[in-house]
Image 1 (cartoon, rainbow, N blue to C red):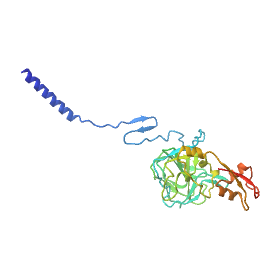
Image 2: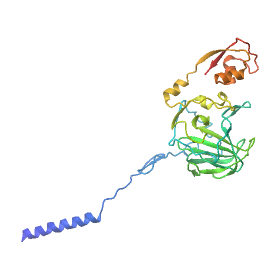
Image 3: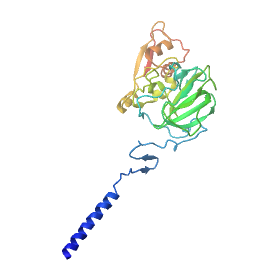
Amino acid sequence: MKVLFFAMAVMLSTHLCAQIHNYYQPIEIDIVEHRDSVTIDSSFSIIPNITGECWESTVYNPYKYEEKPKFPLKLNFEDSTYASPIGRKKVVTSRYGWRYGRAHKGIDIDLITGDSIFSMFAGVVRMSRYTSGHGRTVVVRHYNGLETVYAHLSRYGVKENDTVAKGAYLGKGGVSGNARGSHLHLVVNYKGISINPEYLFNFDESNSLRAQELWVTEKWTQPFLHSSRRQSKIKPLLTEDEALASMIKTRSIYIVQPGDTLSRISKRNNVTISSICKINTIRRNSILKIGQQLVIEK
């Protein structure tokens, strides 16, 4: 009798366990971990908090009083392409460089007033307001630290602190501010430092980046080393070693030939007139003599 009762108890216990197991099925839970300014989970990539540092909507350069980053700068891009800032063929009418005795810290892309303007990458709108010179301006900060500036707009399409996707509508192009004809003045900044946009991007139909990992040296952040009238000779720096090696300046001697001018010498050696004058302690209007030796520094 005791044996039968024990057997029945065991059967009942087994039956109850089976029912409990069937009722309480195991489920998978995504673990979300918060670490300061980033969020990590199983379905999203790491998204930095880009609004936490020098986030000021009334100042064009909020990094003005911050310590400048050291060169070379490493820039990473998630995509191999960017969204074209305009919806038509991109024609660069003025380049990054020295123009009319002043620094032109961006490129001008031709457009018709009223053309739509689009964000090159995903990010957050830091500024959307009128600024001196640039007129109606939209500044988007992106997740790799870059800021793209879209100036001379005729109409805003976003407001400050808006989150925008790659290719998102930002406004309409125009001639506001100090603009000579309708065009988009496109500037690329990193922590307040302007970078020659054509060093980073191919402004053709491919909408491609020069590389997804690029190293930037001071050469590509100083307009006086470039001419706004022609594209600089571009060789992307893909490793830190290449960048460091390029920062070592080399000097050579140029012998002035008949018919030479500072302009011709600068074009022939791919250096600026100002750099020739500076290293040779001469002026732009100095008279060159045939056979004169000039130091060329690259």
